[in-house]
Image (cartoon, rainbow, N blue to C red; front, side, top):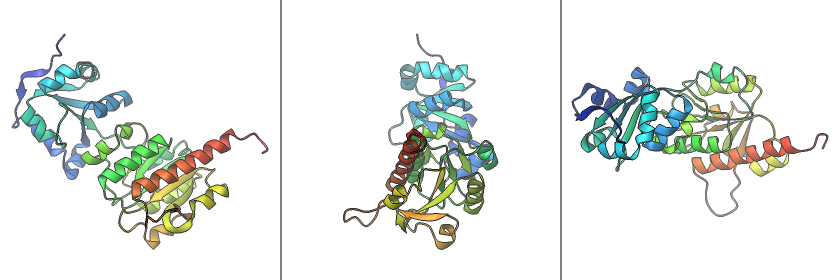
Length: 282
């Protein structure tokens, strides 16, 4: 059975709804509207599954034919569904080949005190001056895969609602709490007061292998990751309990941010799981 959409003739590029959605590609206007774009069926599906409020959904004719179940689910959850032509979708989408489905979703971040209200869990990520949205989104996706309890985007870091960042999370943005707007110092102080040890990923620190062997990754840990180009300056390193370096066994000079974060997070997750599974009194 064909899926029905509002405005069957299709909204044009001058439609107020289309213009409002197009403005969400700019950070300042996202902040004003407290809304962002989710593009493609995977992002829309994860947004709906998480309970996030999807206010509007724009679909092309091909998208309506292909994603009927998803569109009806969005409508059932209160989204207004609008048909648009391929040209309008190309204006709204931020990918070379749009998939015919794009939603407008309310912000989903939580305040720092809300995240810590019941304790932050055992593994968290703090991004300090991380500027590349693809890197930030990949780190968030990795944190989700490693079982982290949340990701904190400090001030001066990229906006987690940047389109490239949202796409790089591959839906993980909707799987774990995200905190925005806290300064690195404020975030570190809050994490430490909640019982987490803060480790800074930095090439000048103690080897990750040594830290793991000493059992220093077994407890609740927050990893602090810095800028892709210049890492963590001295004032940010000083905030951490310790600096820890990913060992380089070959001839590469270093790892990029996303790769280093994956190594650190998985070593912590493995250590914590091994500790939880160990017999009492070992």
